[in-house]
Length: 226
Ligand code: NI
Ligand code: MN
Image 1 (cartoon, protein in one colour):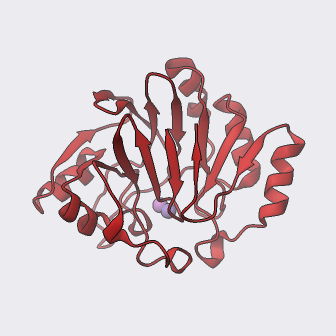
Image 2 (cartoon, rainbow, N blue to C red; image 1 turned 90 degrees about the vertical axis):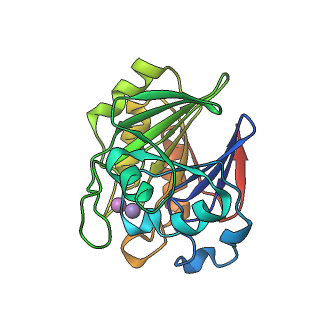
Image 3 (cartoon, rainbow, N blue to C red; image 1 turned 135 degrees about the vertical axis):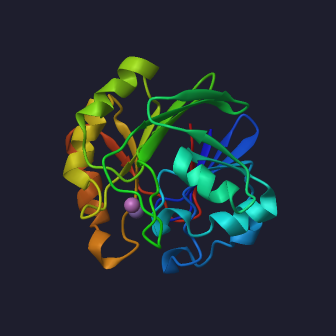
C-alpha cells in the first residue's frame, strides 16, 4: 500500500491497483496549494463524516473520475441525490471490495453538512488487504472502542490518527490510542491547517519516540509505503 498525504485529513491510498481518496479537502487548504485536484486519481472516495473540512472537493473529483463514494448511509444518500454513485455502510460493518476488505469503525465526533443537515454518525475505517491493515481514525476523541480493532481485525501495520487537538485527539491522546490499537507506527494527520490545530512537530515526534513509538509527519504531497 502507498499512502500519500494530501494535507489536513486528506489521503490518497493505492491498494491492489485501486486508488482510494480519503476526505478530500484541498482547494481551501492554503498549505496544499501545490496539490491540483484535477490531477488526482480516484476509484473510490472514502468519507469519515460530513464536515466541510472532509468533503469540500468530493463533488468535483467524483464527477471527473466517476469514483464511488463509500461512507455512512446518510452521506452516500446525500451524494446519490446529486447523481454520484456510492456504497453505504455503517459502524460495525465490513464489505469486501476489489481493493480489499473495508471495516467501518466507531469515531467520537459530530457529523453535519455545511448547511446544518444531518450527516449520520462519524466513523473511521480499517483497510485490510491480503498483506496489510491500516486504520484511518477519522476525526475522533480517544475511545476505548479502539481496543476492539486489533481484537476483531488483527495486527495493524499503520494507524493514521488525528493529532491536532481542539476538534479531535491531540498528541497525548494519540499516544494512548496507539496503545489501544496495538500499533506503534503512527501517521499523524488533522494538524496545522488552521490556528486551532497547529502543533510543534519536533515535540510531537519526540514524545512518541520517548515511548518507543514512531510518529510520521509527511510533507503534503509525499508518501509512505507499507
Ligand atoms: Ni470534523
Ligand atoms: Mn475535521
